[in-house]
Length: 244
Ligand code: SF4
Image 1 (cartoon, rainbow, N blue to C red):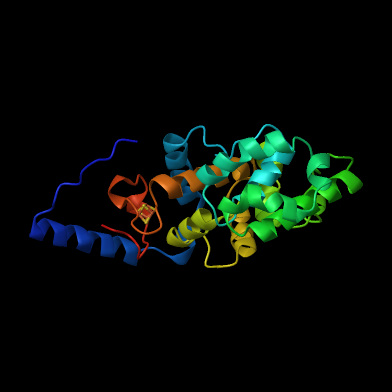
Image 2 (image 1 turned 45 degrees about the vertical axis):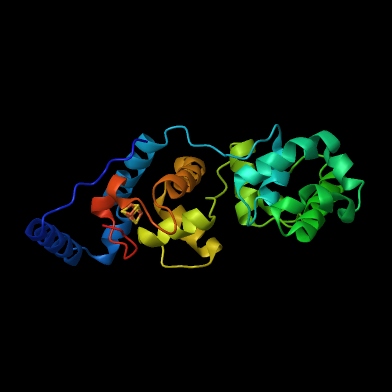
């Protein structure tokens, strides 16, 4: 997306514009933030910005996506994508992962951080998939949550991206931050934010909405300095984090 340089406003013009924004905010009721009309504006902007938003983790099947998603906790997708090609060459199937001790996996995934926990989760999940699910990643949220190291976020990524099943909305750090800034949820726990979003996002958008918000968080509504001057929903955002 081309970055626009925002022209500096003259002092009086800037004051008039701030006054207008304050007046606009003052007329907004709490229910306006999650109203269908505002949600439609948000969806339209996300569709324009990221019409084909998808998962950035490289994978060839549901099991590889599960492993990559476990590795992506507290780590960038770029870093995970550097580690997984060699990892999947070395251990091509769930059975291969299930047959090793977690310690054997640690050196291969060390650079993704928290590698001891991640190794335990990956080997434990592989063992359970082999013993209880015939070597196939399960297709329901309930079954996914029985796998070691898998919570709703990971389950939603795998079920949504690999199987196309809208079981919920992926809530990662980007989605949490944007939901708060756009006042779509007052909650802080990912599961509660997800429940709030599921009430205001139509089910057919659950999968794409998660992907789109993650890309929006990476490219526009960034954590430290959101690029509000190029944000297409700036006029309907009242976040105190705004940079204009
Ligand atoms: S205006 Fe700024 S804070 Fe609000 S959604 Fe856009 S980028 Fe994020």
